[in-house]
Amino acid sequence: QVQLVESGGGLVQAGDSLRLACAASGRTFSSNAKGWFRQAPGKEREFVATINWNGGSTYYADSVKGRFTISRDNAKNTVYLQMNSLKPEDTAVYYCAAARTSSLSLRVYEYDYWGQGTQVTVSS
Image 1: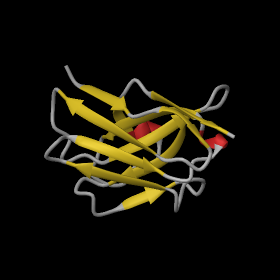
Image 2 (image 1 turned 135 degrees about the vertical axis):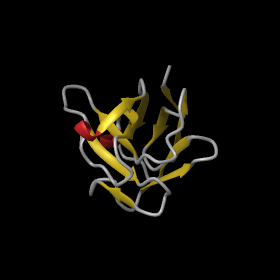
Image 3 (image 1 turned 60 degrees about the vertical axis):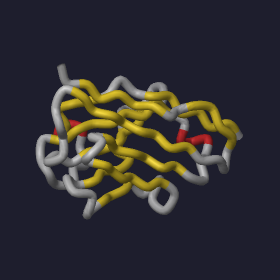
């Protein structure tokens, strides 16, 4: 059974940092792009960041560019999201996902596997 399990969420204050991790089991995703998405209450799931299969390329939503960093460790079958200078508008459930291809993937429909999500709450 393939599983993606996120960890590292929590309640922090504005300006703080968090590091999310997403560990995969059941199969390896070393040839697949990975991504992070988030969904706030009453809103659609939105793209946050993506990384290609070997970590050589990354892409970010404008809203997090310069504050968030996506990385991966294929030996550990894990993808990370370092989040700095957090803002209240970053509050959401954060989901990791594994894409169908090895290239940067920005859209929900490009992903076949999803984690269950981890809550990030940023207070002002």
